[in-house]
Length: 552
DNA sequence: TAACGAACTTAGGATTCGGCTG
DNA sequence: CAGCCGAATCCTAAGTTCGTTA
Image 1 (cartoon, chains in turn orange, cyan, red):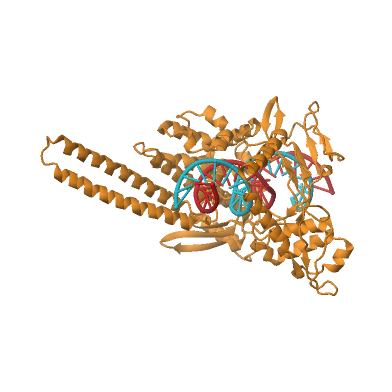
Image 2 (image 1 turned 135 degrees about the vertical axis):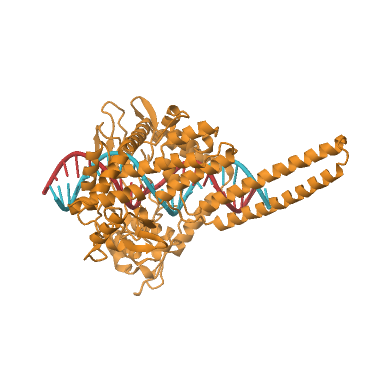
Protein backbone atom coordinates (compact mmCIF):
# COMPACT_ATOMS: atom_id res chain seq x y z
CA UNK A 1 0.00 0.00 0.00
CA UNK A 2 1.12 3.49 -0.73
CA UNK A 3 0.82 6.30 1.69
CA UNK A 4 2.92 9.34 2.41
CA UNK A 5 3.07 11.26 -0.81
CA UNK A 6 5.35 14.22 -0.94
CA UNK A 7 3.57 17.37 0.16
CA UNK A 8 2.68 19.50 -2.80
CA UNK A 9 3.61 22.75 -1.21
CA UNK A 10 6.74 24.31 -2.47
CA UNK A 11 7.77 26.79 0.17
CA UNK A 12 11.32 26.25 1.23
CA UNK A 13 11.85 23.71 -1.51
CA UNK A 14 13.52 23.98 -4.84
CA UNK A 15 10.41 23.28 -6.88
CA UNK A 16 10.23 26.92 -7.82
CA UNK A 17 6.73 28.16 -7.35
CA UNK A 18 6.91 31.88 -7.89
CA UNK A 19 5.89 34.05 -5.04
CA UNK A 20 2.36 33.99 -3.82
CA UNK A 21 0.61 37.28 -3.94
CA UNK A 22 -1.35 38.58 -1.01
CA UNK A 23 -3.35 41.66 -0.40
CA UNK A 24 -4.37 42.49 3.07
CA UNK A 25 -6.20 45.46 4.40
CA UNK A 26 -3.68 46.51 6.95
CA UNK A 27 -0.46 48.15 6.27
CA UNK A 28 2.19 47.04 5.87
CA UNK A 29 0.79 44.06 3.95
CA UNK A 30 -1.39 45.88 1.46
CA UNK A 31 -0.54 44.51 -1.95
CA UNK A 32 2.56 42.71 -0.78
CA UNK A 33 3.62 39.17 -1.64
CA UNK A 34 3.92 36.85 1.29
CA UNK A 35 6.04 33.78 1.81
CA UNK A 36 3.99 31.07 3.44
CA UNK A 37 4.96 28.23 5.69
CA UNK A 38 4.98 24.83 4.07
CA UNK A 39 1.69 23.66 5.54
CA UNK A 40 -0.12 26.92 4.84
CA UNK A 41 1.13 27.02 1.31
CA UNK A 42 0.10 23.49 0.56
CA UNK A 43 -3.46 24.20 1.64
CA UNK A 44 -3.44 27.36 -0.45
CA UNK A 45 -2.56 25.24 -3.47
CA UNK A 46 -5.60 23.05 -2.87
CA UNK A 47 -7.81 26.08 -3.14
CA UNK A 48 -5.93 27.63 -6.02
CA UNK A 49 -6.27 24.49 -8.11
CA UNK A 50 -10.05 24.61 -7.78
CA UNK A 51 -10.49 28.19 -8.89
CA UNK A 52 -12.13 27.12 -12.14
CA UNK A 53 -14.89 25.32 -10.29
CA UNK A 54 -18.11 27.03 -9.53
CA UNK A 55 -18.19 25.76 -5.98
CA UNK A 56 -15.24 27.90 -4.88
CA UNK A 57 -17.63 30.82 -5.29
CA UNK A 58 -20.05 29.36 -2.75
CA UNK A 59 -20.09 30.93 0.64
CA UNK A 60 -20.16 27.67 2.55
CA UNK A 61 -17.21 26.38 0.62
CA UNK A 62 -15.22 29.54 1.22
CA UNK A 63 -16.07 29.72 4.89
CA UNK A 64 -15.24 26.10 5.55
CA UNK A 65 -12.01 26.39 3.65
CA UNK A 66 -10.91 29.58 5.31
CA UNK A 67 -11.73 28.29 8.75
CA UNK A 68 -9.70 25.13 8.25
CA UNK A 69 -6.90 26.96 6.52
CA UNK A 70 -6.48 29.40 9.36
CA UNK A 71 -6.26 26.53 11.82
CA UNK A 72 -3.12 25.31 10.06
CA UNK A 73 -1.46 28.70 9.83
CA UNK A 74 1.33 29.94 12.04
CA UNK A 75 0.31 32.68 14.43
CA UNK A 76 2.07 35.25 12.26
CA UNK A 77 0.12 34.07 9.26
CA UNK A 78 -3.10 34.17 11.20
CA UNK A 79 -2.31 37.74 12.09
CA UNK A 80 -1.79 38.77 8.49
CA UNK A 81 -4.33 36.62 6.66
CA UNK A 82 -7.71 37.55 8.03
CA UNK A 83 -9.94 37.64 4.98
CA UNK A 84 -10.19 35.18 2.15
CA UNK A 85 -11.45 37.80 -0.26
CA UNK A 86 -8.17 39.66 0.05
CA UNK A 87 -6.08 36.69 -0.93
CA UNK A 88 -4.99 36.40 -4.50
CA UNK A 89 -4.50 32.81 -5.58
CA UNK A 90 -4.14 33.50 -9.25
CA UNK A 91 -0.40 32.99 -9.45
CA UNK A 92 -0.60 29.66 -7.74
CA UNK A 93 -3.45 28.76 -10.02
CA UNK A 94 -1.42 29.65 -13.06
CA UNK A 95 1.52 27.68 -11.77
CA UNK A 96 -0.55 24.50 -11.75
CA UNK A 97 -2.22 25.21 -15.07
CA UNK A 98 1.20 25.62 -16.64
CA UNK A 99 2.43 22.52 -14.93
CA UNK A 100 -0.37 20.42 -16.31
CA UNK A 101 0.16 21.89 -19.78
CA UNK A 102 3.82 21.06 -19.55
CA UNK A 103 2.96 17.51 -18.61
CA UNK A 104 0.68 17.16 -21.58
CA UNK A 105 3.33 18.50 -23.90
CA UNK A 106 5.94 16.03 -22.70
CA UNK A 107 7.62 14.03 -25.45
CA UNK A 108 6.48 10.48 -26.03
CA UNK A 109 9.48 8.88 -24.38
CA UNK A 110 9.02 10.91 -21.21
CA UNK A 111 5.38 9.93 -20.99
CA UNK A 112 6.35 6.34 -21.56
CA UNK A 113 8.79 6.59 -18.69
CA UNK A 114 6.15 8.02 -16.36
CA UNK A 115 3.83 5.23 -17.34
CA UNK A 116 6.46 2.62 -16.59
CA UNK A 117 7.04 4.12 -13.18
CA UNK A 118 3.31 4.02 -12.44
CA UNK A 119 3.20 0.42 -13.60
CA UNK A 120 6.06 -0.45 -11.28
CA UNK A 121 4.19 1.01 -8.33
CA UNK A 122 1.06 -0.87 -9.35
CA UNK A 123 3.07 -4.04 -9.61
CA UNK A 124 4.64 -3.61 -6.19
CA UNK A 125 1.71 -2.29 -4.17
CA UNK A 126 -1.34 -3.17 -6.25
CA UNK A 127 -1.65 -6.85 -5.38
CA UNK A 128 -2.06 -9.10 -2.40
CA UNK A 129 -2.11 -12.83 -1.81
CA UNK A 130 -5.43 -14.18 -0.63
CA UNK A 131 -5.88 -17.90 -0.06
CA UNK A 132 -2.74 -18.49 -2.08
CA UNK A 133 -3.97 -16.47 -5.08
CA UNK A 134 -2.50 -13.21 -6.21
CA UNK A 135 -5.38 -10.76 -6.33
CA UNK A 136 -5.60 -7.23 -7.60
CA UNK A 137 -6.36 -4.57 -5.03
CA UNK A 138 -9.04 -2.02 -5.88
CA UNK A 139 -7.65 1.12 -4.27
CA UNK A 140 -4.13 0.60 -3.04
CA UNK A 141 -3.32 4.25 -2.35
CA UNK A 142 -4.54 6.24 0.60
CA UNK A 143 -6.50 9.29 -0.43
CA UNK A 144 -4.36 12.37 -0.86
CA UNK A 145 -5.08 15.53 1.13
CA UNK A 146 -7.26 18.20 -0.45
CA UNK A 147 -10.46 20.10 -0.03
CA UNK A 148 -13.57 18.08 0.53
CA UNK A 149 -16.20 18.43 -2.15
CA UNK A 150 -19.38 16.65 -1.22
CA UNK A 151 -22.17 16.19 -3.76
CA UNK A 152 -25.08 18.58 -3.89
CA UNK A 153 -25.55 21.13 -1.18
CA UNK A 154 -23.09 19.73 1.27
CA UNK A 155 -22.59 21.60 4.55
CA UNK A 156 -18.97 20.45 4.75
CA UNK A 157 -17.83 21.43 1.29
CA UNK A 158 -14.45 23.14 1.31
CA UNK A 159 -13.23 21.58 4.52
CA UNK A 160 -9.65 20.38 4.64
CA UNK A 161 -9.15 16.70 4.11
CA UNK A 162 -5.93 15.86 5.88
CA UNK A 163 -3.00 13.83 4.72
CA UNK A 164 -3.05 10.25 5.94
CA UNK A 165 0.09 9.25 7.78
CA UNK A 166 1.23 5.69 8.44
CA UNK A 167 0.38 6.36 12.08
CA UNK A 168 -3.30 6.64 10.96
CA UNK A 169 -3.33 3.35 9.11
CA UNK A 170 -4.43 -0.04 10.39
CA UNK A 171 -3.02 -3.02 8.51
CA UNK A 172 -5.04 -6.23 8.33
CA UNK A 173 -3.26 -9.32 7.09
CA UNK A 174 -2.50 -12.92 7.98
CA UNK A 175 -0.46 -13.62 11.06
CA UNK A 176 2.04 -15.65 9.05
CA UNK A 177 2.27 -13.28 6.09
CA UNK A 178 5.00 -10.82 5.29
CA UNK A 179 3.73 -7.81 7.18
CA UNK A 180 4.10 -4.65 5.09
CA UNK A 181 6.81 -2.31 6.33
CA UNK A 182 5.76 1.23 7.18
CA UNK A 183 7.73 3.98 5.44
CA UNK A 184 11.11 4.78 6.92
CA UNK A 185 10.86 6.40 10.32
CA UNK A 186 7.15 5.67 10.74
CA UNK A 187 4.96 3.03 12.23
CA UNK A 188 1.46 1.78 11.56
CA UNK A 189 -1.36 2.65 13.89
CA UNK A 190 -2.01 -1.04 14.35
CA UNK A 191 -1.43 -4.37 12.67
CA UNK A 192 -4.22 -6.87 13.13
CA UNK A 193 -5.06 -10.30 11.87
CA UNK A 194 -8.82 -10.40 11.36
CA UNK A 195 -9.92 -12.92 8.77
CA UNK A 196 -13.61 -12.25 9.30
CA UNK A 197 -13.42 -9.04 7.25
CA UNK A 198 -12.20 -8.39 3.71
CA UNK A 199 -10.26 -5.16 4.03
CA UNK A 200 -6.48 -5.01 3.92
CA UNK A 201 -5.94 -1.62 5.48
CA UNK A 202 -8.10 1.15 6.89
CA UNK A 203 -7.94 4.68 8.28
CA UNK A 204 -10.37 7.23 9.61
CA UNK A 205 -11.02 10.27 7.47
CA UNK A 206 -11.38 13.57 9.24
CA UNK A 207 -14.40 15.09 7.46
CA UNK A 208 -17.16 12.72 8.57
CA UNK A 209 -15.01 10.77 10.98
CA UNK A 210 -15.76 7.52 9.20
CA UNK A 211 -13.59 4.61 8.18
CA UNK A 212 -12.09 4.19 4.75
CA UNK A 213 -10.79 0.88 3.49
CA UNK A 214 -8.32 -0.65 1.13
CA UNK A 215 -10.16 -3.56 -0.48
CA UNK A 216 -9.88 -5.98 -3.37
CA UNK A 217 -10.66 -5.26 -6.99
CA UNK A 218 -14.03 -6.45 -8.34
CA UNK A 219 -12.17 -9.02 -10.44
CA UNK A 220 -11.09 -10.88 -7.31
CA UNK A 221 -12.57 -14.21 -6.36
CA UNK A 222 -13.78 -12.81 -3.07
CA UNK A 223 -15.74 -9.96 -4.65
CA UNK A 224 -16.98 -12.21 -7.43
CA UNK A 225 -18.42 -14.66 -5.00
CA UNK A 226 -20.18 -11.91 -3.10
CA UNK A 227 -21.59 -10.59 -6.34
CA UNK A 228 -22.88 -14.02 -7.24
CA UNK A 229 -24.49 -14.40 -3.81
CA UNK A 230 -26.20 -11.07 -4.23
CA UNK A 231 -27.88 -12.22 -7.42
CA UNK A 232 -28.80 -15.54 -5.91
CA UNK A 233 -30.66 -13.75 -3.13
CA UNK A 234 -32.47 -11.67 -5.75
CA UNK A 235 -33.40 -14.85 -7.61
CA UNK A 236 -34.84 -16.30 -4.44
CA UNK A 237 -36.97 -13.18 -4.15
CA UNK A 238 -38.35 -13.98 -7.56
CA UNK A 239 -39.87 -17.16 -6.14
CA UNK A 240 -41.72 -15.39 -3.35
CA UNK A 241 -42.31 -11.91 -4.66
CA UNK A 242 -45.92 -12.66 -5.54
CA UNK A 243 -46.71 -13.69 -2.00
CA UNK A 244 -44.90 -10.66 -0.65
CA UNK A 245 -46.89 -8.41 -2.94
CA UNK A 246 -50.14 -10.01 -1.85
CA UNK A 247 -49.06 -9.50 1.72
CA UNK A 248 -48.25 -5.83 1.45
CA UNK A 249 -51.46 -5.20 -0.46
CA UNK A 250 -53.35 -6.76 2.38
CA UNK A 251 -51.40 -4.63 4.85
CA UNK A 252 -52.61 -1.48 3.14
CA UNK A 253 -55.68 -2.06 5.27
CA UNK A 254 -53.86 -2.98 8.44
CA UNK A 255 -55.24 -1.57 11.66
CA UNK A 256 -51.73 -0.74 12.76
CA UNK A 257 -50.54 2.54 11.30
CA UNK A 258 -46.97 1.32 11.46
CA UNK A 259 -47.75 -1.66 9.31
CA UNK A 260 -49.74 0.37 6.83
CA UNK A 261 -46.88 2.75 6.39
CA UNK A 262 -44.53 -0.16 5.96
CA UNK A 263 -46.80 -1.68 3.34
CA UNK A 264 -47.06 1.53 1.31
CA UNK A 265 -43.33 2.16 1.56
CA UNK A 266 -42.60 -1.35 0.43
CA UNK A 267 -44.92 -0.85 -2.51
CA UNK A 268 -42.88 2.18 -3.56
CA UNK A 269 -39.63 0.29 -3.11
CA UNK A 270 -40.97 -2.54 -5.24
CA UNK A 271 -42.81 -0.58 -7.90
CA UNK A 272 -40.51 2.43 -8.21
CA UNK A 273 -37.22 0.84 -7.19
CA UNK A 274 -36.65 3.45 -4.51
CA UNK A 275 -33.80 3.02 -2.04
CA UNK A 276 -34.53 2.20 1.57
CA UNK A 277 -33.84 5.72 2.83
CA UNK A 278 -32.04 5.69 6.15
CA UNK A 279 -32.23 8.64 8.49
CA UNK A 280 -29.30 11.00 8.22
CA UNK A 281 -27.79 13.33 10.71
CA UNK A 282 -28.90 16.84 9.92
CA UNK A 283 -26.14 19.30 9.10
CA UNK A 284 -23.60 16.56 8.46
CA UNK A 285 -24.58 15.75 4.89
CA UNK A 286 -26.60 17.10 1.98
CA UNK A 287 -30.36 16.90 2.44
CA UNK A 288 -31.30 13.82 0.45
CA UNK A 289 -33.90 11.14 1.05
CA UNK A 290 -34.93 7.62 0.13
CA UNK A 291 -38.23 5.86 0.60
CA UNK A 292 -38.52 5.67 4.38
CA UNK A 293 -37.20 9.20 4.84
CA UNK A 294 -39.56 10.84 2.33
CA UNK A 295 -41.19 13.96 3.66
CA UNK A 296 -44.65 15.36 2.98
CA UNK A 297 -43.12 18.07 0.80
CA UNK A 298 -41.73 15.42 -1.56
CA UNK A 299 -45.04 14.18 -2.85
CA UNK A 300 -48.19 15.67 -4.31
CA UNK A 301 -51.44 13.85 -4.70
CA UNK A 302 -53.61 14.29 -7.77
CA UNK A 303 -56.99 12.58 -7.66
CA UNK A 304 -57.03 13.05 -11.43
CA UNK A 305 -54.22 14.01 -13.72
CA UNK A 306 -53.85 13.71 -17.50
CA UNK A 307 -56.73 11.28 -17.71
CA UNK A 308 -55.41 9.04 -14.96
CA UNK A 309 -56.77 8.50 -11.50
CA UNK A 310 -54.87 8.54 -8.22
CA UNK A 311 -51.65 10.00 -9.42
CA UNK A 312 -48.73 10.55 -7.06
CA UNK A 313 -46.15 13.11 -8.07
CA UNK A 314 -42.77 12.44 -6.46
CA UNK A 315 -40.06 15.07 -6.46
CA UNK A 316 -37.06 14.72 -4.21
CA UNK A 317 -33.28 14.55 -4.16
CA UNK A 318 -31.96 11.02 -3.74
CA UNK A 319 -28.48 9.58 -3.39
CA UNK A 320 -25.77 11.90 -4.71
CA UNK A 321 -28.41 14.65 -4.79
CA UNK A 322 -29.79 13.27 -8.02
CA UNK A 323 -33.36 14.41 -8.53
CA UNK A 324 -36.08 11.83 -8.67
CA UNK A 325 -39.13 13.11 -10.49
CA UNK A 326 -42.01 10.88 -11.41
CA UNK A 327 -45.75 10.95 -11.80
CA UNK A 328 -47.26 7.59 -11.20
CA UNK A 329 -50.78 6.23 -10.98
CA UNK A 330 -51.25 4.10 -7.88
CA UNK A 331 -53.96 1.89 -6.45
CA UNK A 332 -56.82 3.68 -4.78
CA UNK A 333 -55.95 2.15 -1.44
CA UNK A 334 -52.39 3.50 -1.64
CA UNK A 335 -53.68 6.89 -2.55
CA UNK A 336 -56.06 6.97 0.40
CA UNK A 337 -53.31 5.86 2.73
CA UNK A 338 -51.03 8.60 1.52
CA UNK A 339 -53.76 11.15 2.16
CA UNK A 340 -54.02 9.74 5.64
CA UNK A 341 -50.27 9.84 6.26
CA UNK A 342 -50.14 13.47 5.15
CA UNK A 343 -53.07 14.65 7.20
CA UNK A 344 -52.28 17.41 9.72
CA UNK A 345 -48.62 17.40 8.89
CA UNK A 346 -46.24 20.14 7.88
CA UNK A 347 -44.39 19.87 4.59
CA UNK A 348 -41.17 19.10 6.43
CA UNK A 349 -42.67 16.24 8.43
CA UNK A 350 -41.84 12.64 7.64
CA UNK A 351 -44.37 10.99 5.35
CA UNK A 352 -43.79 7.63 7.03
CA UNK A 353 -43.39 8.90 10.56
CA UNK A 354 -43.85 5.49 12.16
CA UNK A 355 -41.42 3.71 9.89
CA UNK A 356 -37.68 3.11 9.95
CA UNK A 357 -35.47 1.09 7.65
CA UNK A 358 -34.64 -1.18 10.58
CA UNK A 359 -38.31 -1.97 11.13
CA UNK A 360 -38.86 -2.52 7.42
CA UNK A 361 -35.86 -4.79 7.05
CA UNK A 362 -36.79 -6.82 10.13
CA UNK A 363 -40.11 -7.54 8.45
CA UNK A 364 -38.46 -8.43 5.15
CA UNK A 365 -36.02 -10.74 6.86
CA UNK A 366 -39.00 -12.51 8.32
CA UNK A 367 -40.58 -12.89 4.87
CA UNK A 368 -37.48 -14.35 3.28
CA UNK A 369 -34.05 -15.21 4.55
CA UNK A 370 -31.55 -12.58 3.43
CA UNK A 371 -34.22 -10.20 2.16
CA UNK A 372 -33.62 -6.49 2.64
CA UNK A 373 -34.95 -3.41 0.87
CA UNK A 374 -32.09 -3.20 -1.59
CA UNK A 375 -32.74 -6.70 -2.89
CA UNK A 376 -35.88 -5.35 -4.56
CA UNK A 377 -33.79 -3.02 -6.66
CA UNK A 378 -31.52 -5.85 -7.73
CA UNK A 379 -34.44 -8.14 -8.43
CA UNK A 380 -36.52 -5.61 -10.35
CA UNK A 381 -33.53 -4.43 -12.34
CA UNK A 382 -32.52 -7.93 -13.39
CA UNK A 383 -36.01 -9.18 -14.14
CA UNK A 384 -36.68 -6.04 -16.17
CA UNK A 385 -33.58 -6.64 -18.25
CA UNK A 386 -34.59 -10.22 -18.89
CA UNK A 387 -38.12 -9.28 -19.90
CA UNK A 388 -37.04 -6.38 -22.03
CA UNK A 389 -34.47 -8.47 -23.84
CA UNK A 390 -37.14 -11.03 -24.55
CA UNK A 391 -39.52 -8.38 -25.83
CA UNK A 392 -37.07 -6.31 -27.86
CA UNK A 393 -34.63 -8.73 -29.46
CA UNK A 394 -35.32 -9.63 -33.05
CA UNK A 395 -33.33 -12.73 -34.05
CA UNK A 396 -33.37 -11.51 -37.66
CA UNK A 397 -31.46 -8.35 -36.78
CA UNK A 398 -27.78 -8.03 -37.40
CA UNK A 399 -25.41 -7.60 -34.46
CA UNK A 400 -25.75 -3.80 -34.49
CA UNK A 401 -29.51 -4.07 -34.34
CA UNK A 402 -29.37 -6.58 -31.53
CA UNK A 403 -27.02 -4.33 -29.61
CA UNK A 404 -29.49 -1.49 -29.95
CA UNK A 405 -32.10 -3.76 -28.40
CA UNK A 406 -29.70 -4.64 -25.64
CA UNK A 407 -28.98 -1.01 -24.93
CA UNK A 408 -32.67 -0.28 -24.87
CA UNK A 409 -33.28 -3.02 -22.35
CA UNK A 410 -30.35 -1.73 -20.31
CA UNK A 411 -31.80 1.74 -20.59
CA UNK A 412 -35.19 0.65 -19.31
CA UNK A 413 -33.42 -0.53 -16.17
CA UNK A 414 -31.39 2.66 -15.82
CA UNK A 415 -34.59 4.67 -16.07
CA UNK A 416 -36.25 2.47 -13.46
CA UNK A 417 -33.33 2.93 -11.08
CA UNK A 418 -33.03 6.64 -11.92
CA UNK A 419 -29.41 6.42 -12.97
CA UNK A 420 -28.69 9.79 -14.46
CA UNK A 421 -25.71 11.62 -15.79
CA UNK A 422 -25.18 15.20 -16.77
CA UNK A 423 -25.43 15.71 -20.52
CA UNK A 424 -21.89 15.31 -21.83
CA UNK A 425 -20.28 18.64 -22.74
CA UNK A 426 -19.66 17.45 -26.27
CA UNK A 427 -23.12 16.06 -26.78
CA UNK A 428 -24.64 18.71 -29.05
CA UNK A 429 -21.56 18.86 -31.19
CA UNK A 430 -21.14 15.14 -31.65
CA UNK A 431 -24.82 14.83 -32.42
CA UNK A 432 -24.39 17.41 -35.14
CA UNK A 433 -21.45 15.56 -36.60
CA UNK A 434 -23.49 12.40 -36.68
CA UNK A 435 -26.38 14.20 -38.37
CA UNK A 436 -24.03 15.51 -41.03
CA UNK A 437 -22.88 11.98 -41.68
CA UNK A 438 -26.46 10.84 -41.97
CA UNK A 439 -27.31 13.57 -44.46
CA UNK A 440 -24.29 12.73 -46.55
CA UNK A 441 -25.20 9.08 -46.53
CA UNK A 442 -28.76 9.85 -47.58
CA UNK A 443 -27.46 11.69 -50.57
CA UNK A 444 -25.25 8.76 -51.49
CA UNK A 445 -28.25 6.44 -51.25
CA UNK A 446 -30.25 8.67 -53.57
CA UNK A 447 -27.43 8.76 -56.06
CA UNK A 448 -27.08 5.03 -55.92
CA UNK A 449 -30.81 4.67 -56.53
CA UNK A 450 -30.57 6.82 -59.63
CA UNK A 451 -27.57 4.94 -60.89
CA UNK A 452 -29.34 1.67 -60.40
CA UNK A 453 -32.33 2.98 -62.29
CA UNK A 454 -30.08 4.11 -65.08
CA UNK A 455 -28.38 0.74 -65.21
CA UNK A 456 -31.75 -1.00 -65.34
CA UNK A 457 -32.87 1.26 -68.16
CA UNK A 458 -29.73 0.41 -70.09
CA UNK A 459 -30.46 -3.26 -69.69
CA UNK A 460 -32.65 -3.75 -72.74
CA UNK A 461 -31.46 -7.14 -73.76
CA UNK A 462 -31.64 -9.64 -70.85
CA UNK A 463 -28.81 -11.51 -72.56
CA UNK A 464 -26.47 -8.54 -72.32
CA UNK A 465 -24.18 -9.97 -69.68
CA UNK A 466 -22.23 -6.79 -69.17
CA UNK A 467 -25.29 -4.65 -68.57
CA UNK A 468 -26.74 -7.29 -66.32
CA UNK A 469 -23.60 -7.43 -64.26
CA UNK A 470 -23.72 -3.68 -64.01
CA UNK A 471 -27.24 -3.78 -62.61
CA UNK A 472 -26.16 -6.33 -60.05
CA UNK A 473 -23.23 -4.19 -59.09
CA UNK A 474 -25.41 -1.13 -58.58
CA UNK A 475 -27.88 -3.14 -56.58
CA UNK A 476 -25.16 -4.31 -54.29
CA UNK A 477 -23.84 -0.82 -53.84
CA UNK A 478 -27.27 0.51 -53.02
CA UNK A 479 -27.85 -2.22 -50.51
CA UNK A 480 -24.57 -1.54 -48.79
CA UNK A 481 -25.24 2.16 -48.57
CA UNK A 482 -28.72 1.59 -47.23
CA UNK A 483 -27.32 -0.63 -44.54
CA UNK A 484 -24.79 1.99 -43.60
CA UNK A 485 -27.52 4.58 -43.41
CA UNK A 486 -29.63 2.34 -41.23
CA UNK A 487 -26.71 1.79 -38.91
CA UNK A 488 -26.13 5.53 -38.58
CA UNK A 489 -29.78 6.12 -37.85
CA UNK A 490 -29.68 3.46 -35.18
CA UNK A 491 -26.63 5.12 -33.70
CA UNK A 492 -28.34 8.51 -33.62
CA UNK A 493 -31.44 7.11 -31.95
CA UNK A 494 -29.34 5.33 -29.38
CA UNK A 495 -27.33 8.42 -28.65
CA UNK A 496 -30.31 10.70 -28.24
CA UNK A 497 -32.11 8.26 -25.97
CA UNK A 498 -28.99 7.97 -23.84
CA UNK A 499 -28.40 11.66 -23.45
CA UNK A 500 -29.03 11.94 -19.71
CA UNK A 501 -29.07 8.31 -18.76
CA UNK A 502 -26.14 6.44 -17.29
CA UNK A 503 -26.13 2.77 -18.27
CA UNK A 504 -22.96 1.85 -16.44
CA UNK A 505 -24.25 1.75 -12.91
CA UNK A 506 -26.99 -0.75 -13.57
CA UNK A 507 -24.75 -2.84 -15.78
CA UNK A 508 -22.12 -3.04 -13.07
CA UNK A 509 -24.27 -3.34 -9.97
CA UNK A 510 -27.80 -4.44 -10.71
CA UNK A 511 -27.99 -6.68 -13.73
CA UNK A 512 -27.21 -10.31 -13.19
CA UNK A 513 -24.43 -10.76 -15.76
CA UNK A 514 -25.64 -14.25 -16.53
CA UNK A 515 -28.71 -12.78 -18.21
CA UNK A 516 -26.54 -10.80 -20.59
CA UNK A 517 -24.17 -13.68 -21.22
CA UNK A 518 -27.02 -16.05 -21.97
CA UNK A 519 -28.46 -13.49 -24.36
CA UNK A 520 -25.13 -13.12 -26.13
CA UNK A 521 -24.82 -16.85 -26.56
CA UNK A 522 -28.38 -17.30 -27.71
CA UNK A 523 -28.21 -14.58 -30.34
CA UNK A 524 -24.61 -14.95 -31.43
CA UNK A 525 -23.44 -11.62 -30.11
CA UNK A 526 -19.81 -11.66 -28.98
CA UNK A 527 -19.55 -10.94 -25.25
CA UNK A 528 -16.92 -8.27 -25.93
CA UNK A 529 -19.65 -6.23 -27.59
CA UNK A 530 -21.41 -5.68 -24.30
CA UNK A 531 -18.64 -6.07 -21.71
CA UNK A 532 -15.25 -4.45 -22.03
CA UNK A 533 -12.11 -6.03 -20.61
CA UNK A 534 -12.58 -4.79 -17.05
CA UNK A 535 -16.20 -5.85 -17.04
CA UNK A 536 -15.31 -9.29 -18.34
CA UNK A 537 -12.84 -9.63 -15.51
CA UNK A 538 -15.41 -8.58 -12.96
CA UNK A 539 -17.97 -10.99 -14.39
CA UNK A 540 -15.56 -13.85 -14.96
CA UNK A 541 -17.59 -15.96 -12.54
CA UNK A 542 -20.70 -15.49 -14.64
CA UNK A 543 -18.97 -16.05 -17.96
CA UNK A 544 -17.72 -19.37 -16.64
CA UNK A 545 -21.13 -20.30 -15.34
CA UNK A 546 -23.89 -19.21 -17.70
CA UNK A 547 -24.99 -20.94 -20.85
CA UNK A 548 -27.67 -19.78 -23.24
CA UNK A 549 -30.42 -21.39 -21.21
CA UNK A 550 -29.79 -19.36 -18.10
CA UNK A 551 -32.95 -17.89 -16.63
CA UNK A 552 -32.83 -15.34 -13.87
C1' DT B 1 -34.26 1.66 21.39
C1' DA B 2 -31.65 5.14 19.73
C1' DA B 3 -27.15 6.26 18.63
C1' DC B 4 -23.01 4.69 17.06
C1' DG B 5 -19.59 2.03 14.62
C1' DA B 6 -18.07 -1.03 11.17
C1' DA B 7 -18.08 -3.09 6.72
C1' DC B 8 -19.49 -3.35 2.61
C1' DT B 9 -22.00 -1.86 -2.10
C1' DT B 10 -23.40 1.68 -5.14
C1' DA B 11 -22.67 6.16 -7.54
C1' DG B 12 -21.55 10.09 -10.71
C1' DG B 13 -17.93 13.09 -12.05
C1' DA B 14 -13.01 13.79 -13.20
C1' DT B 15 -9.09 12.21 -15.36
C1' DT B 16 -6.55 9.49 -18.47
C1' DC B 17 -6.06 6.57 -22.40
C1' DG B 18 -5.85 5.30 -26.95
C1' DG B 19 -7.61 5.25 -31.53
C1' DC B 20 -9.19 8.03 -35.24
C1' DT B 21 -9.19 12.01 -38.26
C1' DG B 22 -8.05 16.20 -40.58
C1' DC C 1 1.34 13.78 -36.39
C1' DA C 2 -1.14 16.65 -33.32
C1' DG C 3 -5.42 17.25 -31.51
C1' DC C 4 -9.79 15.69 -30.54
C1' DC C 5 -13.25 12.56 -28.79
C1' DG C 6 -15.46 8.76 -26.69
C1' DA C 7 -14.37 4.98 -23.79
C1' DA C 8 -12.11 3.25 -19.97
C1' DT C 9 -10.42 3.93 -15.64
C1' DC C 10 -9.86 6.27 -11.42
C1' DC C 11 -11.58 8.46 -7.47
C1' DT C 12 -13.92 8.79 -3.44
C1' DA C 13 -18.51 10.20 -1.78
C1' DA C 14 -22.85 8.39 -0.44
C1' DG C 15 -25.59 4.93 0.36
C1' DT C 16 -27.34 0.16 2.93
C1' DT C 17 -27.01 -3.16 6.39
C1' DC C 18 -25.95 -5.26 10.60
C1' DG C 19 -23.90 -5.57 15.01
C1' DT C 20 -22.70 -3.19 19.34
C1' DT C 21 -23.09 0.06 22.94
C1' DA C 22 -25.12 3.44 26.17
